[in-house]
Amino acid sequence: MKHTALPRRTFLRGLGTLMALPALEAMVPAVSAASAQGAPRRTAFVYAPNGMNMADWWPETVGRGYELPRILQPLAAHHEDFSVLSGLDQVAGSEGADGAGDHARANATWLTGVRARKTAGADIQVGASIDQVLAEQMGKQTRYSSLELGCDRARTAGSCDNGYSCAYQFNIAWKGPATPMPPEADPKQVFDRLFGNGTSKEETASRQKREQYNKSILDFVLEDANSLKRQLGATDRRKLDEYMTAVRELEERIGQAEKFKTQNVAPALRKDFLPQDYSYEQHIRMMYDLMTLAFQTDSTRIATFLVAHDGSNRSYPFIGVPDGHHDLSHHGNDAEKKARIAKINTFHTTQFAYFLGKLKAVREGEGTLLDNCAIMFGSGLADGNRHAHLDLPILLAGRGGGSIKSGQSIEFKKETPLCNLFVSLAERMGAKVEKFGDSTGRLEAIGQTTPSGPRQFQLDRDTKWKKKV
Image 1: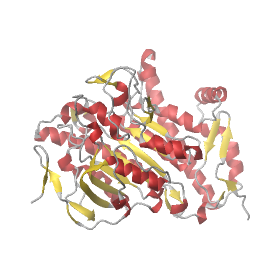
Image 2 (image 1 turned 90 degrees about the vertical axis):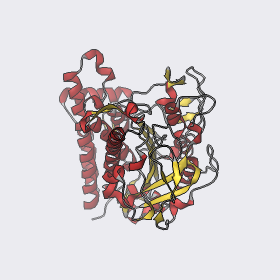
Image 3 (image 1 turned 135 degrees about the vertical axis):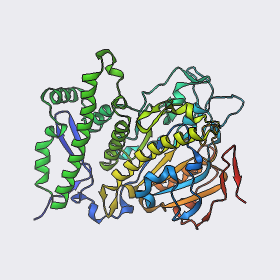
Image 4 (image 1 turned 45 degrees about the vertical axis):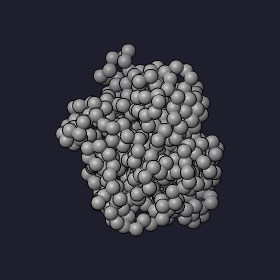
């Protein structure tokens, strides 16, 4: 049976609904004939707050086959899919003549490499972030140039950290020096954006009808989907069913959070409700699922996710940590406090492992969606007790379409700018970025195999880094 060739930009349509499709064999140029290197490349930047308990973060050795430390153990199933990068600094966040405010600077400088002007007024000034530089060059290839996600309500004004604007502390993506790209924290809003048709009147009618009759967004595209299936081979029909099942499962989970809000939150407070009030873990995972669907359907190739803003004092009683995170981060070298910090850090790497698993589960060409991604995970602080912006905890997951050697522990020379990694990632994404922030070159090592051996620097558990003897 001969099947119809489909354009890559094929959508399922219905009232207020425009559902992009994953890559199918029937699409031209044929996905089945494309190698992993020929598929679109995506990149994302995921931020965890308040640094890490560094003694439980760094591997003891470099190269392949290193032993995962405590905080990274939830990633064991993906050991060959990410690398640990040590020795990278973001000195723009460090304390200078403008004094305290390290949490605001940690967020503001992480992806910009530019020191933020200390102000709580409207005259904010930092720099364009690397994700937006990529979006400017490559965003026209997709429906959305970039996607900004978070778990905190966005703030773009007010004073938050020792005289720094809240705009710095609640945003990691910056369109320009004075233009933050506020992250969307409501999964329902992101879902509607990804699967709406852009016509507000139709989208409103669709949403009202779904809520009134307890219908799924898939019900509005069912006729189109069934028509399409008749044109597809068995492999593509199975792939389409898997994709629509994933969409439906996420929609149901979002619906459960909305139901919880209706039943347990006073009407006057509902506009400020977020799923983390229902389950923080589920909130994070919903956002990871949305990012996966956005990449899978090529709705965007660039995303940021602010899991929590730096300085967050959220408590984690569900993992046995009732203390505020920020308070704990000032541990004063107390062993019990550091153990609780490690628990929080491990919670966040567990959620990141969930994300990598979702990306790996999506087949794309001869590989997986993760093979065609470069995902940076980390923090703008190392040890929160010292507000250290040096030797940051950074993971790089995915193979960047074959341009990245994953599964390694890589140690760079002391005082290597984190911005060197951004220049290197931009090159692998196909963008032209010769200089960014305080970059001094490229990190060719991420595309090479690192010889195995001991790390040259390790954390002095009291105060600083020291060379091994």
